[in-house]
Image (cartoon, rainbow, N blue to C red; front, side, top):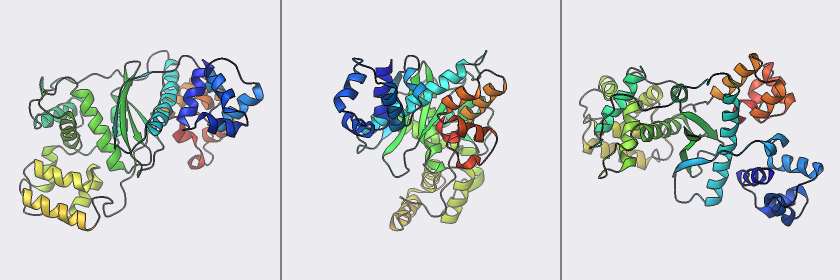
Length: 359
């Protein structure tokens, strides 16, 4: 098991055998022997491996690693396989800690995910995604108002959400998969909120409409429509924008972005697909955005990023009920015992890594 864990940790760190050997002060051939299960490191080398890979020693001796099934990357073509592997192994580490934490509870603290009732049996047109999004909102009792905390909504209904530390300007564009039958979605912690939210809603569309989309339709296009309709329902769009408009103001789009958590460009396209504005109006607005570079960086401050906090809540729940002690809690959070004790006592919480390591 150590050999598999070491390989996973090295790939998660994006290091080659030679890179890791140089950091630890041993040959790449020795690292290869560890990964092939031919030999085991001494306690001193084990500690250096732990420091170099930024994992606790306990990580190397966990049970059988989790396997991700049906991995679906939403990525741009320039993202290398090496980087994808690193992201995947970062996610696996988080999932393993999450599953181990949940297993400590006498009863599962999470609801099981399942598609809601009222979904179209077959999505024959892109417009059917509107009905699907409204069916989910109705089943989850969300009404038609803005959703302030989308991650919390997904977690509440059995979808585990994880975050990685990819920068907003890098080429990673989301990941969806299943681990031990559990649906998971991964986004970058450093993205602006509108990008996180659209990716999360898009992946929700994949989960809800799995095997329901007609073969002649592009699944990505259908799920994009689902995402837009889920975040900004048509009734809300008609109420906030109007059923017919000759023009839209940029500031108006900015205010709607703040309210519904969708990018200004997405709101503009949403108004067009609902027939609120004409194709000419959309083209004019699109040109304005391109001329000003707003299609890359929209005007105004970026939308606040979402925060995955369920892992922390479960961890402190388990600690309060004596399912685990402080040492195990620190291990699951991926931090030192000293740092964890400071976090538990609310000392300089914003400076500690604990709030972001586990999720």
